[in-house]
Amino acid sequence: KLVVTPPMKHFQEEKLSLALFWHHRLQAFWEENLNRDELKLLRSVIPKTWILDPAPVPPGSTVDGPSVQEKPLGEWAELSKASRKERALVIKASGFHETAWGARSVVVGDDVSAEEWKESLIRALGSFPQPISIVQEFRKPARLEHPVYSDHGEIEEMAGRLRLSPYFFVCGAQANWSGTLATFCPADKKIIHGMKDGALMPCVG
Image (cartoon, rainbow, N blue to C red; front, side):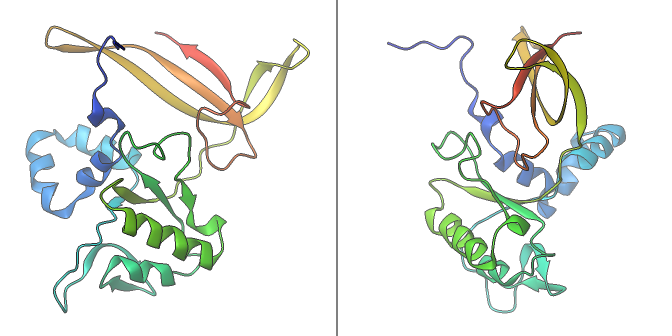
């Protein structure tokens, strides 16, 4: 019997929640439940995100999503016609699916050919809802420098890009930040994740 303490909370792995934050029908809910500063902060750090839902829409309707050739989408499949400039987007699987971690399902639109983008989009729509996939505006991580230990045990400056994974523990009704794991990945990696080439650094307050 496998026991995990504290128990996993599936919603913390759901990239779908980022799409719900930007969903046009939920904006009034967020404005009612978050104060102005909280809403401003979240809108500045969460890239615009949409659910890749293949459900058909009525004739004449449009999909809430990115535009192609300055026109709204009539269905998600039309996103396959996006130009390289319009493909500054990333497709990701959500949840605890086996493809939803380690960048296994991640496809950066302007980093692949038009054919690869089309195939990735069709695959994401065809597999719905196992897993549910999202499409998100791609934001390139900032390039930083930080000292790390080399393979020879010497300290040297390394250029890289940073991922921060905060850890919270619930005590009673209060969620407390207990620390953050920083993953410092080589600068030539466009997609950052817990890779073997990265340096793992604990951060505590």
